[in-house]
Image (cartoon, rainbow, N blue to C red; front, side, top):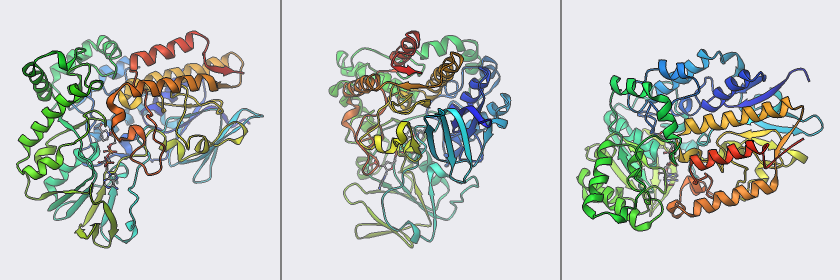
Length: 529
Ligand code: NAP
């Protein structure tokens, strides 16, 4: 077929954009299909009030092009969503990528023709795209999760999901707003909404741990210093399990006095951000160590929140770090406002949405606006919502029903020439996503180049190698306390979803090393035909 590209890329977020650029650099023809009307992925869809990245701006950025990282200026310590969206747009223009992207192309199906070794993608709007290779750059947190509650269609007010936020501003003035959920998206948006709504009611099923962001305008001196040392800082970040630059204490929390431990937690709390959990090396491995930091955060919550009953409701009773730690600006203090109420829906769930609001058991809560900050069908959701058919027309939806399996989070046995960026079985969501994305994109593009340049037509993960890797992913997961918490890492937030620990928790350095070994050994674990 002469309209066949080398590579079809699904998604124009940070993964898809860099992949298109990288493919072109290697002389491969590539086309992106993107469901939205613009680039940016996560930062295109999640426009909710207060949306910021939880990784510092100087780190949550591409490093593949030094001119880009030197010339781009971030305005805050933690980038706000509009700035991240501008950055994605800038990258698309700077590297002349826009002519390679078709927007409003939501992929409904992707199927592999074995005789021709061609993938055919079909859009929900009817168009088709043919390519030798297909890369799902569809994101880990991109398939919105709506609670299985009846009655959405009856509500007469406005309803929003944080991950499908409209482009036009939503006006909260004089309105009674209900927010369902208390994950990162809720924790970021609640303080902002509370500032303009007449009344805000938050429906909490499980409280979450959050540390202060201490966000502030970017200090130009800090930015200049980072830029002068970017290479060393990025290299150092790559040595950390999370891929996030910072100081990590590898010692045990249990080897120091209560006073010293407290001082360290306090120091990190005052500094703010995710590296709070870098206080000690065993916080995610040792229950007593974890308990010590839980007690510290509970104390903080109780000191901030005036009403003791509300404070008690906000204190989680599971381990810290079992779910992704949240990073906030004034979250807990927002519950001291007269216009904010917290409703516990753990013991009695939301039973229905009706004409005027939400019902929890026998109690009706009226609202003008309901916001579902109810997260995502994480890691597998975006892939499972596409009808992907590989060798012998076998369906990924069927194969993954009992839980996903993947070789390195990059490829699946039975699906030749199909790759996933940051798929299940890769460190992805446990790391700074940008360097993780770059590492995957470089692996995938180089691999495709290797296959095509050597005159082969297909590459496919071997079943044995996949199983071996997946067993390792599960073993690594079992070593951490994360497994003790019902989280989206485990698929626990979606009714009926298989409970499997999906991300690789062995750390970014070990993962990169494994990928490098695979390449050095001639793409070990892959069959190239
Ligand atoms: P989330 O962490 O999965 O939170 C969803 C919330 O909705 C949870 O509190 C959940 O309660 C609640 N919920 C779901 N169904 C419910 C129901 N039927 N009734 C009541 N409550 C219900 O989703 P998220 O806040 O969108 O965040 C997801 C991930 O995206 C984060 O962990 C993070 O990795 C990423 N994120 C990052 C940033 C950032 O960079 N700053 C911001 C936002 C999100 P349960 O816990 O009981 O299920």
